[in-house]
Image (cartoon, helix red, strand yellow):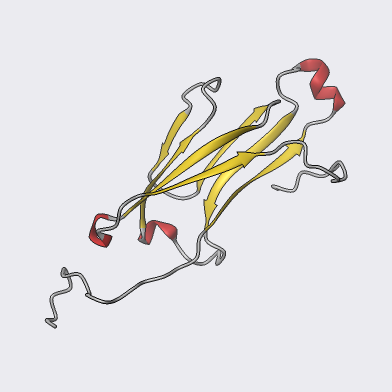
Length: 131
């Protein structure tokens, strides 16, 4: 093996954890009267479980594909935080494409995630958990 830092390491696997998901917050009855199409604020995200790890060291971009009813349903982010926050009333399946840095020579990863606003058997939150 050479000391060329640009060559790929054969028979070597690099692993680091990522976390993806969504969080939703009910905006309350007062907001429903003002804007019936915005019952919840939600965030769809790709994060590291270790808040000190910079995902941009390994990720070139994250592409979120939202429901077509959203303005600009395709959101491409090239730097952290890799997350999209919107308001709405309906649940839907979103896709997340993670594109790795070119030097990784890896294919993008495609994930799907169901944005759930009305969880079963869950109490209604009165405090915004995203703040």
